[in-house]
Image (cartoon, rainbow over all chains, first blue to last red; front, side, top):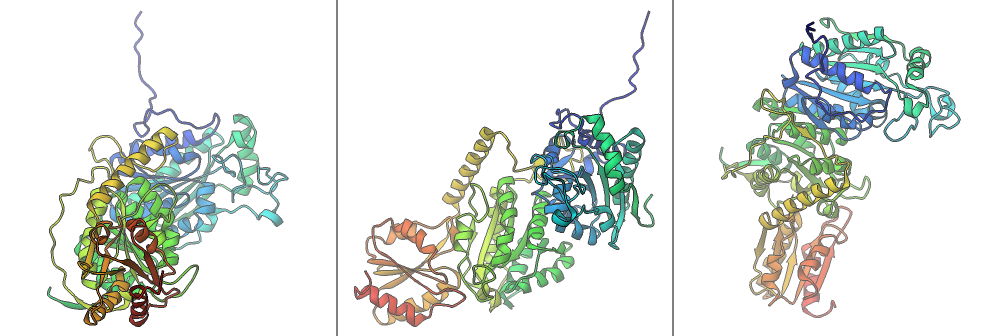
Length: 252
Length: 354
């Protein structure tokens, strides 16, 4: 009896063989994979320069199979601006968490978007600081307990969550912004589509594109991986509604 | 091109372009604004790019990005702005990225004033950013020297993969002098095969980072950087001496201050006083040789600065207790006068100062 083996699924060329350091149930790995797949499918891996940020994704330069530069905390959009202005025909992306992008790097992201920098930002929102051990992020939900909001975030004390996609979408020079989620297969499919659209936007030189991805942090939330996906769906999606917030004409 | 009458800040811009710099990212701050405006106008003409950043923090990180893409890139600022850039400068030192940073110093600390000062000496030569690194610092005293040193600054940056600072002050930035942009011999520089430009079929992906989570690895990186800084200290010392061969009191001054002290030396010599000047051009590495060369006949050294006394510490280290070292300075944007400097020299010679 002969068994003919047929490969139906394989690792994307967009990722290295390095084993990631991410916690079990964290969706960084799956988002990495989708970014890498899109770059591979577009056949631009050799034209791409990624900018890694500070936080859990700090080591993403070891995982993406393309040239990578490590930026200081929050400054990835400025670093990407420098790269893109020098190499306008290359694909340049940043991969940033919520502490990096929405807190310390708020100035850099707003102004890169306002300038309409032709870069793509992959923004991972898990409503907490992961790498430093579960402190409040600007995206932490009201009532959510973290090590620095032990009684839960209170709007009148620690402020309310910042909706980056909505905020950046008000800027005229922004070409494309969509918020997606990783909590089930259906939403993962739309996440990949959004990532595709963002890189296509850059390829067409239409300007700034960003995909905000709702993500999990089982370790710091204190839930198991399955509960964490539930928590995204039940608690994060109502505060961070999914959808396209800006789509300039020509974005497909 | 011939000689042109130009303003100091604009000279820095044209000198950088002459040195092959086509990218500038900056943020306005007095007294160096003419440079930012000059680059905004000139860089598009030479096929480069200029971005007015939203802050000095963003500006230095744009420089970080452009440098990582393998081009010659510059930024400039003045004291409070340079403080904000220290994060990026430390990262660039750690990631070994070449760039030139101009600091046209003004009075401080804090918001200080917009008058010329030399009070950023410590910050420039003793660190400024976090971590174990050194920053090559070049201090021109004339606008023509700005032109000459700019090429050197970019060459040092590229040869050793390090950020390099041009340290001027508000007065040098605002004054006008005739300058000539002359081609200088270029160094044989290593290829920038480390730059992240997209692999383009050119082998394995490259990474630029300053992160070494394993302490043994970071120590190795620190030691490698240190070896590089030692090489810079051996090869990149620059200074000028003026009438030091028989001098009894040797003044030490750099930049704008050196111009004033030179006049003092000339006047003193006319009156029979044996005085001279050591002018460090590289502030780091600090020149020690002119001190060794003059220790035999010098009775004392006098550091003259537009600060409350910063370089004087390096002068003391260079003299190493073998002769007395005195200090004369003004702070806050005030400039020492020739008369006051001369009075201090006369007091040293007369044995009034001990």
